[in-house]
Length: 324
Image 1 (cartoon, helix red, strand yellow):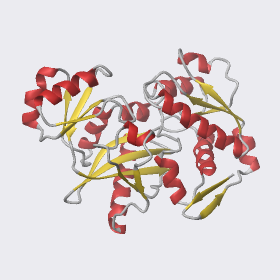
Image 2 (cartoon, rainbow, N blue to C red):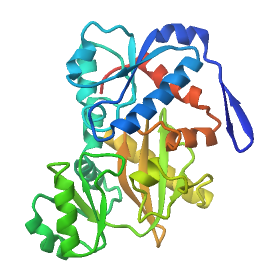
Image 3 (tube, helix red, strand yellow):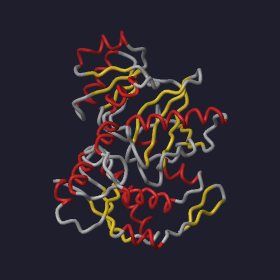
Image 4 (cartoon, rainbow, N blue to C red):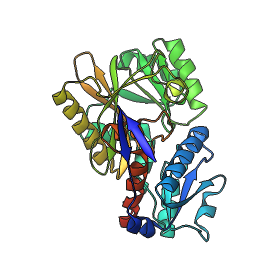
């Protein structure tokens, strides 16, 4: 299969010896989280790419008790394309690790930490990395005090959801209470942080290397779920629009954030740039989307890496799997 980007054709042929070493591969997708539909799309894209590259792969819609996936497995390793809770948060990773089954992406601790946006920000803060000022919100009665401590507008989000699910932009106490109640219906932990006005960027990481940054813009109030997965008018800039030295600064920050959280092999870091040019870390994604709207494949193409090569390289790291 070929992959086109900016008029170039990217071809990839997997090494037959590598294909043999990978053995039979299960692509886990779907799941029971709020990101199920996106995960199914990601999983089908990954599965098709692996099969196109010659890998003996098949899809598994993982639902219900996760322990069942490790009972008498009919596969040698797992490509995890599950997004959200129980698939991306360290739960599945712990089960596979305990069963001695190699799997793609970050280990148990890094997966659990990155899925928890609040505690990820504590880690950023502890390491002196720039992240917007924030508070944990545990009750609607805290709204007035939070508005005194933080500068509106504010972002309100469930701490353990992805794909911008449940995220709202607020400026008033009434809006904050309403957004909190909506987020609390999805999660028992709600994160409130200062809204950074400015440009939005995302940096994909592959095997300890930062890929070209992508600049994001949308007519939506922010890069929300619809803008990410459904809209056709979301704009992606590659090159990202930054001066070369600023893009290097952005990539370096993203790679540092990825390492600080303890992630491995692949992922994505979301960053804002304020009007003074300062970069601010938002979050780390350990199993980013792999749909036709997704950012990691887009960044890989800009680096000359086809989708087939991308998924095979991610999978190949499982040959040296050691949970961390």
